Length: 427
Image 1 (cartoon, rainbow, N blue to C red):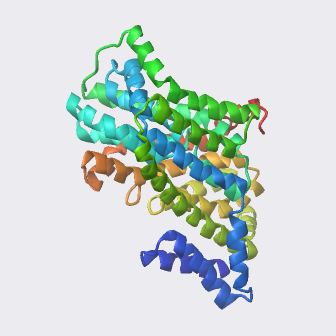
Image 2 (image 1 turned 45 degrees about the vertical axis):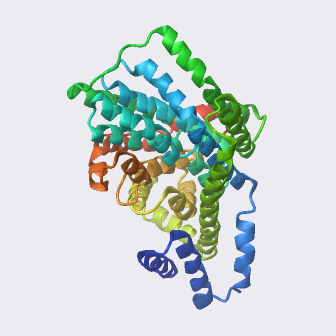
Image 3 (image 1 turned 45 degrees about the horizontal axis):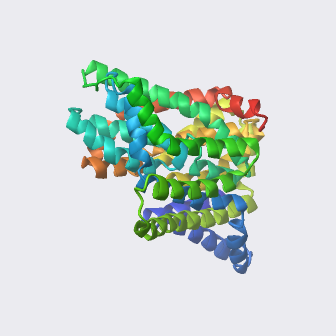
Protein backbone atom coordinates (compact mmCIF):
# COMPACT_ATOMS: atom_id res chain seq x y z
CA UNK A 1 0.00 0.00 0.00
CA UNK A 2 2.84 2.36 0.91
CA UNK A 3 4.64 1.63 -2.37
CA UNK A 4 1.42 2.24 -4.33
CA UNK A 5 0.93 5.65 -2.71
CA UNK A 6 4.54 6.72 -3.42
CA UNK A 7 4.56 5.66 -7.06
CA UNK A 8 1.06 7.01 -7.78
CA UNK A 9 2.15 10.38 -6.37
CA UNK A 10 5.27 10.34 -8.55
CA UNK A 11 3.33 9.29 -11.66
CA UNK A 12 0.66 11.98 -11.20
CA UNK A 13 3.28 14.70 -10.81
CA UNK A 14 5.19 13.50 -13.89
CA UNK A 15 2.00 13.33 -15.99
CA UNK A 16 1.37 17.01 -15.26
CA UNK A 17 4.57 17.78 -17.17
CA UNK A 18 6.57 18.68 -14.07
CA UNK A 19 10.35 18.03 -14.40
CA UNK A 20 11.34 14.64 -13.02
CA UNK A 21 13.73 16.12 -10.46
CA UNK A 22 10.98 18.32 -8.94
CA UNK A 23 8.49 15.44 -9.13
CA UNK A 24 10.85 13.29 -7.05
CA UNK A 25 11.32 15.98 -4.42
CA UNK A 26 7.62 16.81 -4.13
CA UNK A 27 6.72 13.12 -3.87
CA UNK A 28 9.03 12.74 -0.90
CA UNK A 29 7.83 15.93 0.81
CA UNK A 30 4.15 15.11 0.24
CA UNK A 31 4.48 11.56 1.56
CA UNK A 32 6.50 12.60 4.62
CA UNK A 33 4.08 15.41 5.44
CA UNK A 34 0.79 13.53 5.03
CA UNK A 35 1.64 9.90 5.82
CA UNK A 36 4.51 9.92 8.34
CA UNK A 37 5.64 11.72 11.47
CA UNK A 38 9.14 12.35 10.13
CA UNK A 39 10.04 16.04 10.65
CA UNK A 40 10.30 17.93 7.37
CA UNK A 41 13.43 19.63 8.70
CA UNK A 42 15.27 16.33 8.26
CA UNK A 43 14.80 16.65 4.50
CA UNK A 44 17.21 19.59 4.32
CA UNK A 45 19.90 17.59 6.09
CA UNK A 46 19.36 14.59 3.82
CA UNK A 47 19.55 16.81 0.72
CA UNK A 48 22.96 18.03 1.84
CA UNK A 49 24.43 14.73 3.03
CA UNK A 50 23.00 12.85 0.03
CA UNK A 51 25.36 14.52 -2.45
CA UNK A 52 28.26 14.98 -0.06
CA UNK A 53 30.18 12.27 -1.88
CA UNK A 54 33.60 12.59 -3.46
CA UNK A 55 32.57 10.35 -6.38
CA UNK A 56 29.84 12.76 -7.54
CA UNK A 57 32.52 15.33 -8.41
CA UNK A 58 33.41 13.12 -11.39
CA UNK A 59 30.16 14.15 -13.11
CA UNK A 60 30.89 17.89 -13.70
CA UNK A 61 34.52 17.15 -14.56
CA UNK A 62 33.61 14.59 -17.25
CA UNK A 63 30.99 16.99 -18.62
CA UNK A 64 33.59 19.76 -18.81
CA UNK A 65 36.12 17.47 -20.49
CA UNK A 66 33.51 16.40 -23.04
CA UNK A 67 32.68 20.03 -23.88
CA UNK A 68 36.34 20.92 -24.33
CA UNK A 69 36.78 17.95 -26.66
CA UNK A 70 33.60 18.71 -28.62
CA UNK A 71 34.66 22.31 -29.28
CA UNK A 72 38.37 21.61 -29.54
CA UNK A 73 38.76 19.80 -32.85
CA UNK A 74 39.36 16.37 -31.32
CA UNK A 75 36.30 14.86 -33.04
CA UNK A 76 37.24 15.85 -36.58
CA UNK A 77 40.73 14.35 -36.16
CA UNK A 78 39.28 11.11 -34.82
CA UNK A 79 36.90 11.01 -37.80
CA UNK A 80 39.81 11.48 -40.21
CA UNK A 81 41.70 8.62 -38.54
CA UNK A 82 38.64 6.34 -38.55
CA UNK A 83 37.91 7.08 -42.21
CA UNK A 84 41.50 6.33 -43.20
CA UNK A 85 41.18 2.88 -41.60
CA UNK A 86 37.72 1.68 -42.73
CA UNK A 87 36.50 4.21 -45.30
CA UNK A 88 37.32 1.93 -48.25
CA UNK A 89 34.89 -0.79 -47.12
CA UNK A 90 31.22 -0.90 -48.23
CA UNK A 91 29.43 1.87 -46.35
CA UNK A 92 32.81 3.28 -45.42
CA UNK A 93 31.59 6.55 -43.96
CA UNK A 94 28.97 4.71 -41.90
CA UNK A 95 31.68 2.41 -40.54
CA UNK A 96 33.83 5.47 -39.89
CA UNK A 97 30.96 6.93 -37.86
CA UNK A 98 30.85 3.85 -35.59
CA UNK A 99 34.64 3.81 -35.13
CA UNK A 100 34.76 7.57 -34.50
CA UNK A 101 31.88 7.34 -32.00
CA UNK A 102 33.73 4.53 -30.21
CA UNK A 103 36.92 6.61 -29.99
CA UNK A 104 35.12 9.76 -28.89
CA UNK A 105 33.06 7.77 -26.38
CA UNK A 106 36.32 6.66 -24.79
CA UNK A 107 37.23 10.27 -23.97
CA UNK A 108 33.90 12.07 -23.44
CA UNK A 109 31.62 9.95 -21.20
CA UNK A 110 28.46 11.43 -22.73
CA UNK A 111 26.18 9.99 -25.39
CA UNK A 112 24.56 13.23 -26.70
CA UNK A 113 28.01 14.88 -26.81
CA UNK A 114 29.26 12.00 -28.97
CA UNK A 115 26.33 12.40 -31.39
CA UNK A 116 26.90 16.16 -31.62
CA UNK A 117 30.65 15.92 -32.13
CA UNK A 118 30.60 13.12 -34.70
CA UNK A 119 27.20 13.70 -36.30
CA UNK A 120 27.66 17.40 -37.06
CA UNK A 121 30.61 16.45 -39.28
CA UNK A 122 29.75 13.01 -40.65
CA UNK A 123 26.00 13.24 -41.33
CA UNK A 124 26.40 16.11 -43.84
CA UNK A 125 29.48 14.36 -45.28
CA UNK A 126 27.52 11.12 -45.83
CA UNK A 127 24.65 12.96 -47.53
CA UNK A 128 27.15 14.77 -49.78
CA UNK A 129 28.80 11.44 -50.67
CA UNK A 130 25.48 9.94 -51.77
CA UNK A 131 24.26 8.10 -48.68
CA UNK A 132 20.57 8.35 -47.75
CA UNK A 133 20.08 10.88 -44.97
CA UNK A 134 18.17 8.37 -42.86
CA UNK A 135 21.10 5.95 -43.00
CA UNK A 136 23.59 8.56 -41.86
CA UNK A 137 21.39 9.87 -39.06
CA UNK A 138 20.47 6.35 -37.93
CA UNK A 139 24.01 5.04 -37.65
CA UNK A 140 25.31 8.12 -35.80
CA UNK A 141 22.38 8.27 -33.36
CA UNK A 142 22.80 4.56 -32.58
CA UNK A 143 26.59 4.49 -32.34
CA UNK A 144 26.47 7.63 -30.20
CA UNK A 145 24.99 5.46 -27.46
CA UNK A 146 28.46 3.96 -27.01
CA UNK A 147 29.23 7.20 -25.15
CA UNK A 148 27.73 5.78 -21.94
CA UNK A 149 28.97 2.17 -22.31
CA UNK A 150 32.61 2.64 -23.30
CA UNK A 151 34.34 4.18 -20.27
CA UNK A 152 34.59 6.80 -18.94
CA UNK A 153 30.83 6.98 -18.50
CA UNK A 154 28.71 9.49 -16.59
CA UNK A 155 25.91 6.88 -16.40
CA UNK A 156 28.26 4.43 -14.67
CA UNK A 157 29.27 7.12 -12.17
CA UNK A 158 25.57 7.66 -11.39
CA UNK A 159 25.06 3.93 -10.83
CA UNK A 160 28.15 3.69 -8.64
CA UNK A 161 27.00 6.62 -6.51
CA UNK A 162 23.50 5.10 -6.15
CA UNK A 163 24.71 1.64 -5.16
CA UNK A 164 28.13 2.29 -3.55
CA UNK A 165 29.78 0.20 -6.27
CA UNK A 166 33.35 0.59 -7.54
CA UNK A 167 33.58 3.14 -10.36
CA UNK A 168 36.94 1.74 -11.46
CA UNK A 169 35.59 -1.82 -11.71
CA UNK A 170 32.53 -0.57 -13.64
CA UNK A 171 34.74 1.33 -16.09
CA UNK A 172 36.87 -1.75 -16.76
CA UNK A 173 33.77 -3.92 -17.03
CA UNK A 174 32.44 -1.68 -19.82
CA UNK A 175 35.50 -2.05 -22.07
CA UNK A 176 34.85 -5.48 -23.63
CA UNK A 177 31.04 -5.08 -23.93
CA UNK A 178 31.64 -1.68 -25.54
CA UNK A 179 34.02 -3.16 -28.11
CA UNK A 180 31.67 -6.08 -28.80
CA UNK A 181 28.68 -3.79 -29.34
CA UNK A 182 30.73 -1.48 -31.57
CA UNK A 183 31.67 -4.53 -33.68
CA UNK A 184 28.03 -5.62 -33.91
CA UNK A 185 26.95 -2.10 -34.95
CA UNK A 186 29.70 -2.08 -37.61
CA UNK A 187 28.54 -5.46 -38.92
CA UNK A 188 24.95 -4.18 -39.18
CA UNK A 189 26.17 -1.01 -40.95
CA UNK A 190 28.31 -3.02 -43.38
CA UNK A 191 25.45 -5.43 -44.16
CA UNK A 192 22.97 -2.61 -44.90
CA UNK A 193 25.52 -0.73 -47.02
CA UNK A 194 26.51 -3.80 -49.03
CA UNK A 195 22.90 -4.83 -49.64
CA UNK A 196 22.03 -1.34 -50.91
CA UNK A 197 25.32 -0.78 -52.74
CA UNK A 198 26.19 2.40 -50.83
CA UNK A 199 29.39 4.21 -51.89
CA UNK A 200 32.83 3.61 -50.43
CA UNK A 201 35.87 5.85 -50.30
CA UNK A 202 39.32 5.38 -51.84
CA UNK A 203 41.62 3.13 -49.82
CA UNK A 204 44.02 5.31 -47.84
CA UNK A 205 47.73 4.59 -48.03
CA UNK A 206 49.64 3.62 -44.91
CA UNK A 207 51.33 7.00 -45.04
CA UNK A 208 47.95 8.75 -44.95
CA UNK A 209 46.83 6.51 -42.09
CA UNK A 210 49.98 7.30 -40.12
CA UNK A 211 49.47 11.02 -40.68
CA UNK A 212 45.83 10.79 -39.51
CA UNK A 213 46.92 8.84 -36.44
CA UNK A 214 49.63 11.39 -35.56
CA UNK A 215 47.13 14.23 -35.79
CA UNK A 216 44.61 12.44 -33.56
CA UNK A 217 47.08 10.94 -31.09
CA UNK A 218 46.74 13.76 -28.55
CA UNK A 219 43.03 13.02 -28.19
CA UNK A 220 43.57 9.26 -28.17
CA UNK A 221 46.14 9.62 -25.38
CA UNK A 222 43.33 10.64 -23.05
CA UNK A 223 41.98 7.07 -23.20
CA UNK A 224 45.23 5.68 -21.82
CA UNK A 225 45.62 8.47 -19.27
CA UNK A 226 42.18 7.90 -17.74
CA UNK A 227 42.00 4.10 -17.90
CA UNK A 228 45.70 3.55 -17.21
CA UNK A 229 45.65 5.93 -14.28
CA UNK A 230 42.63 4.24 -12.68
CA UNK A 231 43.98 0.70 -13.20
CA UNK A 232 47.48 1.52 -11.96
CA UNK A 233 46.10 3.26 -8.89
CA UNK A 234 47.74 6.59 -9.74
CA UNK A 235 44.38 8.32 -9.26
CA UNK A 236 40.75 7.53 -8.51
CA UNK A 237 37.95 7.81 -11.08
CA UNK A 238 37.04 11.26 -9.74
CA UNK A 239 40.65 12.44 -9.97
CA UNK A 240 40.80 10.94 -13.46
CA UNK A 241 37.79 13.07 -14.41
CA UNK A 242 39.53 16.22 -13.18
CA UNK A 243 42.71 15.19 -14.98
CA UNK A 244 40.80 14.61 -18.23
CA UNK A 245 39.19 18.08 -17.99
CA UNK A 246 42.58 19.77 -17.60
CA UNK A 247 44.16 17.66 -20.35
CA UNK A 248 41.24 18.28 -22.73
CA UNK A 249 41.55 22.04 -22.12
CA UNK A 250 45.30 22.01 -22.84
CA UNK A 251 45.12 20.03 -26.08
CA UNK A 252 42.04 21.90 -27.37
CA UNK A 253 43.50 25.36 -26.62
CA UNK A 254 47.27 25.08 -26.94
CA UNK A 255 47.96 22.03 -29.15
CA UNK A 256 45.09 21.85 -31.66
CA UNK A 257 44.28 25.56 -31.10
CA UNK A 258 40.67 25.07 -32.22
CA UNK A 259 39.31 26.40 -28.91
CA UNK A 260 40.00 30.10 -28.41
CA UNK A 261 40.32 31.59 -24.96
CA UNK A 262 37.41 33.88 -25.84
CA UNK A 263 35.22 30.74 -26.17
CA UNK A 264 36.19 29.52 -22.72
CA UNK A 265 33.42 31.38 -20.90
CA UNK A 266 30.74 29.88 -23.16
CA UNK A 267 32.08 26.33 -22.67
CA UNK A 268 32.31 26.76 -18.89
CA UNK A 269 28.76 28.14 -18.64
CA UNK A 270 27.39 25.33 -20.80
CA UNK A 271 29.15 22.74 -18.63
CA UNK A 272 27.96 24.42 -15.42
CA UNK A 273 24.33 24.46 -16.63
CA UNK A 274 24.34 20.75 -17.50
CA UNK A 275 26.19 19.85 -14.29
CA UNK A 276 23.71 21.82 -12.17
CA UNK A 277 20.79 20.06 -13.84
CA UNK A 278 22.26 16.61 -13.23
CA UNK A 279 23.29 17.39 -9.66
CA UNK A 280 19.77 18.66 -8.90
CA UNK A 281 18.35 15.39 -10.25
CA UNK A 282 20.86 13.44 -8.14
CA UNK A 283 19.92 15.40 -5.02
CA UNK A 284 16.20 14.68 -5.35
CA UNK A 285 16.81 11.08 -6.41
CA UNK A 286 18.92 10.50 -3.29
CA UNK A 287 16.01 11.84 -1.24
CA UNK A 288 13.60 9.53 -3.08
CA UNK A 289 15.93 6.59 -2.47
CA UNK A 290 16.03 7.46 1.23
CA UNK A 291 12.22 7.39 1.36
CA UNK A 292 12.04 3.99 -0.35
CA UNK A 293 14.65 2.53 1.98
CA UNK A 294 13.08 3.96 5.13
CA UNK A 295 9.72 2.46 4.11
CA UNK A 296 11.39 -0.93 3.46
CA UNK A 297 10.06 -1.06 -0.13
CA UNK A 298 13.11 -2.62 -1.86
CA UNK A 299 13.43 -5.16 0.94
CA UNK A 300 9.75 -6.09 0.68
CA UNK A 301 9.96 -6.44 -3.10
CA UNK A 302 13.07 -8.57 -2.78
CA UNK A 303 11.41 -10.89 -0.28
CA UNK A 304 8.29 -11.18 -2.46
CA UNK A 305 10.33 -12.08 -5.56
CA UNK A 306 12.33 -14.71 -3.72
CA UNK A 307 9.22 -16.26 -2.17
CA UNK A 308 7.43 -16.29 -5.54
CA UNK A 309 10.24 -18.35 -7.04
CA UNK A 310 11.41 -15.70 -9.49
CA UNK A 311 15.08 -16.61 -9.87
CA UNK A 312 17.95 -14.59 -11.38
CA UNK A 313 16.92 -15.37 -14.99
CA UNK A 314 13.33 -14.28 -14.45
CA UNK A 315 14.34 -11.21 -12.43
CA UNK A 316 16.79 -10.00 -15.09
CA UNK A 317 14.12 -10.39 -17.77
CA UNK A 318 11.63 -8.37 -15.70
CA UNK A 319 14.31 -5.75 -14.90
CA UNK A 320 15.20 -5.36 -18.58
CA UNK A 321 11.56 -4.92 -19.60
CA UNK A 322 11.04 -2.36 -16.83
CA UNK A 323 14.17 -0.39 -17.75
CA UNK A 324 13.40 -0.48 -21.49
CA UNK A 325 9.90 0.83 -20.79
CA UNK A 326 11.28 3.60 -18.57
CA UNK A 327 13.78 4.48 -21.30
CA UNK A 328 10.90 5.50 -23.54
CA UNK A 329 9.88 8.29 -21.19
CA UNK A 330 12.85 9.30 -19.04
CA UNK A 331 16.49 10.26 -19.45
CA UNK A 332 19.23 7.85 -18.27
CA UNK A 333 20.25 9.80 -15.16
CA UNK A 334 16.71 9.79 -13.77
CA UNK A 335 16.15 6.11 -14.57
CA UNK A 336 19.36 5.01 -12.85
CA UNK A 337 18.79 7.15 -9.79
CA UNK A 338 15.17 6.04 -9.39
CA UNK A 339 15.41 2.34 -10.26
CA UNK A 340 18.89 1.40 -9.03
CA UNK A 341 17.93 1.72 -5.32
CA UNK A 342 14.87 -0.48 -6.00
CA UNK A 343 16.39 -3.16 -8.25
CA UNK A 344 19.90 -3.32 -6.78
CA UNK A 345 18.95 -4.90 -3.42
CA UNK A 346 16.84 -7.50 -5.24
CA UNK A 347 19.72 -8.32 -7.59
CA UNK A 348 22.07 -8.71 -4.63
CA UNK A 349 19.66 -11.01 -2.79
CA UNK A 350 19.52 -13.21 -5.91
CA UNK A 351 23.31 -13.42 -6.12
CA UNK A 352 23.75 -11.19 -9.20
CA UNK A 353 27.11 -9.40 -9.27
CA UNK A 354 26.72 -5.62 -8.69
CA UNK A 355 29.17 -4.73 -11.47
CA UNK A 356 27.44 -7.05 -13.93
CA UNK A 357 24.08 -5.53 -13.02
CA UNK A 358 25.54 -2.05 -13.54
CA UNK A 359 26.56 -2.94 -17.10
CA UNK A 360 23.08 -4.37 -17.76
CA UNK A 361 21.49 -1.11 -16.58
CA UNK A 362 23.93 0.93 -18.69
CA UNK A 363 23.09 -1.02 -21.86
CA UNK A 364 19.39 -0.46 -21.17
CA UNK A 365 20.07 3.27 -20.84
CA UNK A 366 21.95 3.15 -24.12
CA UNK A 367 18.94 1.62 -25.87
CA UNK A 368 16.68 4.23 -24.25
CA UNK A 369 18.72 6.96 -25.95
CA UNK A 370 17.29 5.91 -29.34
CA UNK A 371 13.72 4.98 -28.40
CA UNK A 372 10.90 7.56 -28.74
CA UNK A 373 9.40 9.72 -27.45
CA UNK A 374 12.21 10.90 -25.14
CA UNK A 375 15.32 9.37 -26.75
CA UNK A 376 17.93 12.13 -26.40
CA UNK A 377 20.07 10.87 -29.28
CA UNK A 378 17.04 10.94 -31.58
CA UNK A 379 16.49 14.63 -30.85
CA UNK A 380 20.18 15.51 -31.25
CA UNK A 381 20.49 13.63 -34.55
CA UNK A 382 17.16 15.08 -35.69
CA UNK A 383 18.48 18.59 -35.09
CA UNK A 384 21.58 17.85 -37.18
CA UNK A 385 19.89 15.97 -40.02
CA UNK A 386 16.59 17.96 -40.01
CA UNK A 387 14.64 14.69 -40.03
CA UNK A 388 11.42 14.48 -38.02
CA UNK A 389 11.18 12.32 -34.91
CA UNK A 390 9.10 9.70 -36.76
CA UNK A 391 11.69 9.38 -39.53
CA UNK A 392 14.50 9.25 -36.97
CA UNK A 393 12.73 6.49 -35.06
CA UNK A 394 12.49 4.44 -38.26
CA UNK A 395 16.08 5.25 -39.21
CA UNK A 396 17.58 3.65 -36.09
CA UNK A 397 15.51 0.45 -36.47
CA UNK A 398 18.23 -1.98 -37.67
CA UNK A 399 20.73 -0.82 -35.05
CA UNK A 400 18.06 -0.88 -32.33
CA UNK A 401 17.42 -4.56 -33.07
CA UNK A 402 21.17 -5.18 -32.90
CA UNK A 403 21.32 -3.51 -29.49
CA UNK A 404 18.42 -5.62 -28.19
CA UNK A 405 20.24 -8.79 -29.25
CA UNK A 406 23.36 -7.50 -27.51
CA UNK A 407 21.32 -6.75 -24.36
CA UNK A 408 20.30 -10.40 -24.15
CA UNK A 409 23.93 -11.50 -24.58
CA UNK A 410 25.33 -9.15 -21.92
CA UNK A 411 22.46 -9.97 -19.53
CA UNK A 412 22.87 -13.73 -19.50
CA UNK A 413 26.61 -14.07 -20.16
CA UNK A 414 28.19 -12.40 -17.14
CA UNK A 415 31.86 -13.17 -18.09
CA UNK A 416 31.55 -10.70 -20.97
CA UNK A 417 31.38 -7.92 -18.36
CA UNK A 418 33.30 -9.43 -15.46
CA UNK A 419 36.32 -11.09 -17.07
CA UNK A 420 38.45 -7.95 -17.47
CA UNK A 421 37.95 -6.41 -13.99
CA UNK A 422 38.50 -9.83 -12.41
CA UNK A 423 41.65 -10.39 -14.46
CA UNK A 424 42.96 -6.98 -13.39
CA UNK A 425 42.26 -7.81 -9.74
CA UNK A 426 39.65 -5.07 -9.31
CA UNK A 427 36.94 -7.40 -7.98
